[in-house]
Length: 142
Image (tube, rainbow, N blue to C red; front, side, top):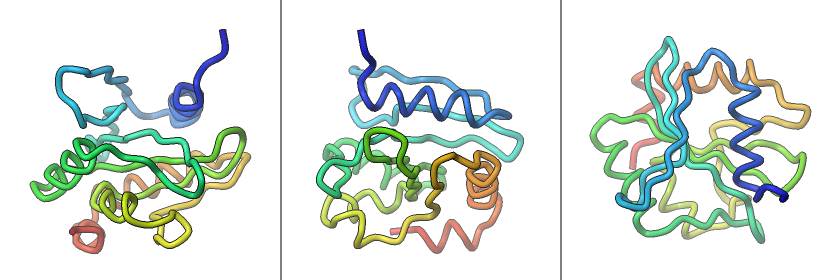
């Protein structure tokens, strides 16, 4: 049986971004909680995995609310998106969740775009910088 595109994205992230303790979250009891929790030397963070459809990232109202509330209270959250297949990984701050609902991704400045073949060291550095730089957090606040 073939995996759905989000499951394939999870495998790419898990297998490629080493140096992170990952927990995959499957939660129907608490809508909006992101798909993945990560913990690295620089701290803990959450990532919602999304497949781009028609130049959009589809987030539920619960997902948007969760990301905005968590970032408002100092949490580190991201939305990692890509087109199906071996296309670029596009990383957004969780504080951009409402923008992602309202606009096409081509109209929003991502935190990072990692082209295929993926440079996971680059992705790690972006996550690390955002987790340790207070000015960076302020830049992406709502």
